[in-house]
Length: 296
Image 1: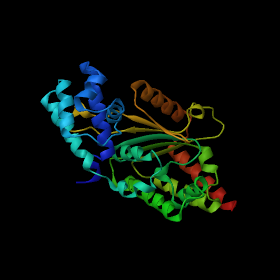
Image 2 (image 1 turned 135 degrees about the vertical axis):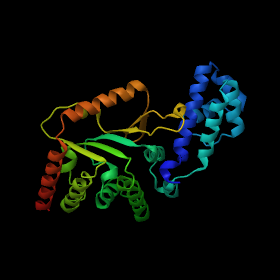
Image 3 (image 1 turned 60 degrees about the horizontal axis):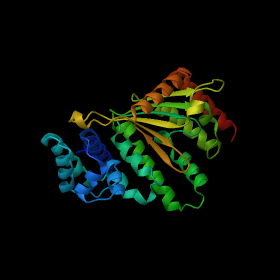
Image 4 (image 1 turned 120 degrees about the vertical axis):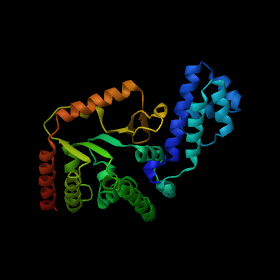
């Protein structure tokens, strides 16, 4: 069984929590009644319903389903998700090297089938070369040990392997021209990075389009975001809705309300209207790579 056929524990927690919250809200059972039924505090129930708690038993799931008057089929599905909490994807072996709060994103990324992102300043992690990522790691964390930096490089390499190993994965990248000009690690590093970016853009499951200088577009206001969409589940009742990941300097946001998803879809569509086509983008990427070479 491959990673894509299993549900990472992080993703399973999210799915389980979302379904339990939905059952509580639609059944009319109060938070007070729900937490008392399984013997937990308000904060613990909140962590459970937001997919942040690993401490829940089959007995507690059954009891919540009972008071929510869930069908046996629904109860069985939730117990199956509970079983998924024991499965750890490859990245758990690097947990100490994973940046704070980034573990949730990794769990979602592994489960996602499609990514649509806008990158205004830095190239997306899934298409960064090792020298580029290493330069960024040292710049942002000058006190980080060499071992931790190299572990982050290994994590990135494992993440990127899906681009070639998983034909069902779809990557739709919108990148500001500014991200092509920033001299991360120097001219040689950037020239290599951009040539690699051009190579990746030729993959059948990757779409790369650049938003050139001289255009005024909504991305200037929206900033960096990633829209993740997930494959259909074997049970449509547990189909996971899209998530927008917004990376911040001190904290990250995970947006999932339908109106939030709709606004970011609209933003992506409008940014794309200002972007170059895929062939024009590749030509521009290679042109700027040559400029970096000449400016070493």
